[in-house]
Length: 86
Image (cartoon, rainbow, N blue to C red):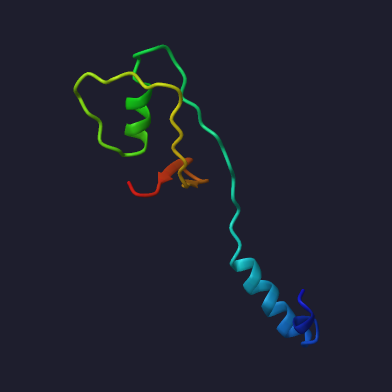
């Protein structure tokens, strides 16, 4: 605890601890890679997962790799992924 909180009475210290705990959130980091043979739809799958528009016309092959950093919330009860912006 910060020194100024330690100088307070026990009730105030406990209130500070509770407020601090209520403001915490567990964060899990994952890296998801989509791999496959040429022309099988990896980019299309990725765009659909991220809620981006998919061009139905023939796609020009992706050169190299694409990186799509996103924040995703996961409902730990239902295991549902909630992608921000969708």
